[in-house]
Structures are given as structure tokens and as C-alpha cells.
Image (cartoon, rainbow, N blue to C red; front, side, top):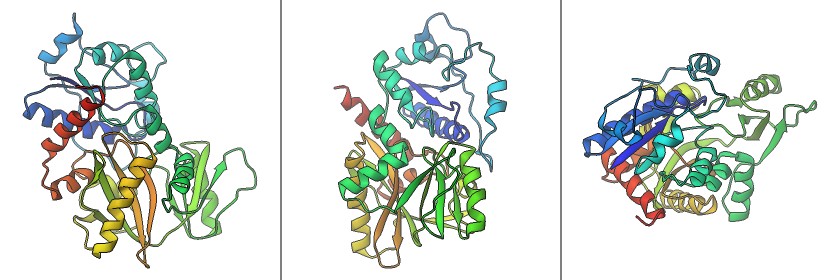
Length: 345
């Protein structure tokens, strides 16, 4: 198949996305597909006469590793050579329409928030993963929490604090402060004292005007991927210091991960069934990954669902798939196969 692997964009998670896309592109080529890696923000930079012709030319613009901190998006903007104010490159729709399917390797805004999916739906472009509605719902942690409550999914109590507010509420200490619609723990703080609260809010407000403040749940951090409605084995995440922030997520050796997680059988079962329930409640398609805390009593708390989980060398979903006997290349193929079923292919 002719496949565009779409990555990058104007997101704090663009480096993670490009690394995911680079790995996916290599995997698909190993399987005999004509896969082309393209940055959503910059578009395809090489000259072509026919967009279908780009699948016969190998062009890559990937990076080898994710830096310790999120990229400076002003620097990214300044390096753009196209003269348009769109968050899409000039030729994105044209080249994506020429593909048999677009593999969505995007993370964060401009990918996980449903805007690109909605645009592609309007343009008749096939793509992998969840549609625009479930993407938007899952990315907005305030809305997702409300759906969890309606759907019977236990989640930490939380409030939304707006940047224009003067008297910032809190839910008691310790608590977690995070932007409402971001991923990869960008702008997230674990706050232990009132003195730390203001600084944590200011950090989160750098990324978004609406911030979620939720109760801190002490326990074991676990994740469960779901493919076509069925849960993978549970993975437990144990950062060597601090919490599972951006640096600990993507810098090799800073976090220990155990898959399958060493948990009582009944807790494992509850995590997997809850992950499948979250998949239903948030209206996911094809695949996703759910973040959990298992507290000291064995209770399972869902933090969020991710419609486009990372596919980097340190990402959790490929590790879970491997524990289930599925290689990285098999996982990429399965995502495409299940996505095409949405379109009756």
C-alpha cells in the first residue's frame, strides 16, 4: 500500500511524534509498503509533478531521539519556509488524498484533539485510529472525567481552573495540576504544599488557559493498551525519581517498566476490563492506551485515555503488544488492518 505516516505538527509533543513516525515508517517499509514520513506542519518539501509519485521516492525527515524537554514551538515556526498561517503544510491534503491510508503518528494538539481527523473526514481521506469526536472528547480531560462518571469509571476528583480566575480553587494537598488538553505530562506538576500551587498553575497556564486540578492518588502507576476492543497485558511504570514526567517518559534508563505487571490476578483483571470500558465510554476506534493508578487498597483509578499513544523506543503500547506475542511490525500492520475495516476495506 501507499501510506503517508503523518507526524510532527505544531505541538509540544512534536519530537515524540516524529520519533514515533520514524519507527512506524521503517516498520511499514519492512513489510513491503511504500511509506513516506511527512511533517504535518511543514508538508512534503520535495518537488513533485504527481502526488502519487512521491511513494516511489524515499524521503525522510525524522530525528533519532526525543530531547529531555519539549521543543520551543516559536523556533519551529521561524524555520518554516511556506507563506501560510495554517497549522498544515501547503500540500498536506493533496498528498494524503493520494495515499491508500494515512497512519496517524501525531501526538498532542493537531492530531490527538480531533481537528486533523475532522479535516480528513471532510476531504474523504482514510486514516488510522479514532475519529474526530472520540479524539476531541478524550483529549479534553474535563469532558472525559464527566463521561467516566456517567459510564461508571472511577477517576480522581478534579476541578477546572481558568487563567482569568483570580481566586484559584484547589482540591486539597497533595494534588496534580495539568493542562486540560495536553499529553506526555507536558506542564504537569505534583503539588504537595500551598506554596507550590501557584507555580504549578503558572507552568500549566503556559500551555493552556484551562487547567485541571485533581486529587493525588497514591499508588502504583499502570497502563493498559486496547486493540480492537481487547486489552493487552498490564504494564507497570516505576520512575527511578519523581513522577512519570516528560523526561522520565522518553529518556532511556530513567524508568523501570514491568510487563506483564506483577499484580494480583483480580487487580489485573479489573484493570483490563476497565480499560475496555474506557475504550467504549470514550468511543475509541481501533486502539488506545489507558492510564491508571492502583491505590493501596487495590482500587483502580483511571486518569485518562489516549487515542494516539506513543510508538517510540520507550513507549508503553509496543511493550504491551510484545508481551502479548505481537511484534512492533505486527502492531503497525494490525492498526492499519483494523482501521481499514472502518471504511469497509
